[in-house]
Amino acid sequence: MSEYWNDVIGGFKSLLVGTNITTREFFKPVVTEQYPYSVPVIPPNFRGHIELIKNEETGAPNCIVCGMCQRACPSGCISLKGEKPEGAKKKVLTNYILDFTTCSLCGSCVESCNFNAIKFSRDYNQASTRKEDYIFDLLKRLEEQG
Ligand code: SF4
Ligand code: SF4
Image 1 (cartoon, helix red, strand yellow):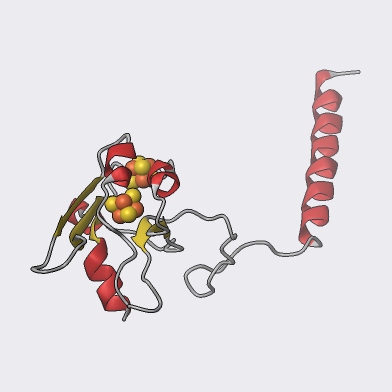
Image 2: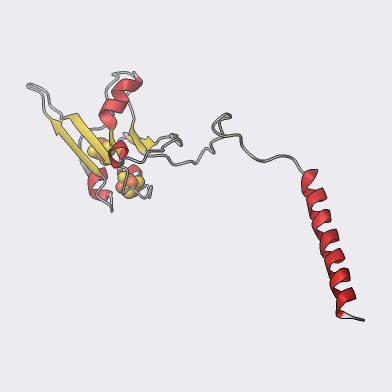
């Protein structure tokens, strides 16, 4: 058979295969998310940046300023400060900064905290071209949550 007819048959086969795939995909359920117009379902084990946990009774952060999370972080993302108010027995958290630009979401900080004071947020919507927008003041964020 001439090369011409080989090309015609090969092209026709290719057309049939392509049409078959297109038809099959056309009848499958639509999986495309219309983000940002529809909010995606966030899986329960999703890891957003860490955030502080508030004590439901006192309204204050559960953090006792032990510094374990800071020491456990392999990327040095966490810096925190606390002070002991006059007459108080325990330190109070005064500053908790997360540098999310270098956080690998490894979870060491959350695992190292024995006081249920930090957790992964469900904040999936982080987008900015400015590095400063990824330096989070977690204490301020907690206060803003009310
Ligand atoms: S390990 Fe927990 S309690 Fe200790 S400083 Fe970190 S967040 Fe606070
Ligand atoms: S998740 Fe890992 S890298 Fe991120 S702040 Fe915690 S310990 Fe550091």
